[in-house]
Figure 1 (cartoon, rainbow, N blue to C red):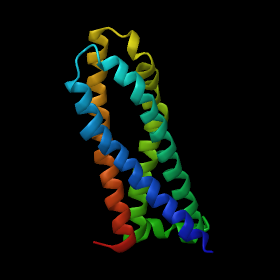
Figure 2: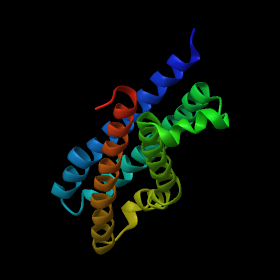
Figure 3: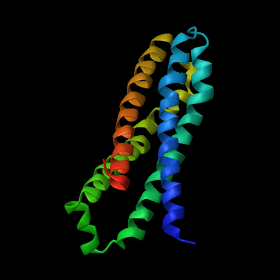
Length: 162
């Protein structure tokens, strides 16, 4: 069995699943929270969003690690092979997508992770605190989805061209 094929599929599935999760947050979960009464919101946020954070961690981590393995299997991380990343359409697309993916995953692990305790403690929040956090829950997933779309388009360009 060709390990490149296996890790490429893991990479693709985890990347598009990550995008699907962020789309679900943007188009299903956040609008549902905003339509709920102020009394219902804390329980819903407390019940659902910690699981969403854990799923995002698993998907983003899997996408990054499998992408690194795919890159290693394709280049051996040898200098002359890595130089193709700077001088070809394929390489530049991979650098853009991989770089943005890595930065987005790091943002998730080091910045968004600070939001998880907020979701866990949602039942104890005041209405004003909940409103502030809902603003964050509207903005971050929207930006993340835009970045993930750029990443996936970049990877598609690398795989097949325009």
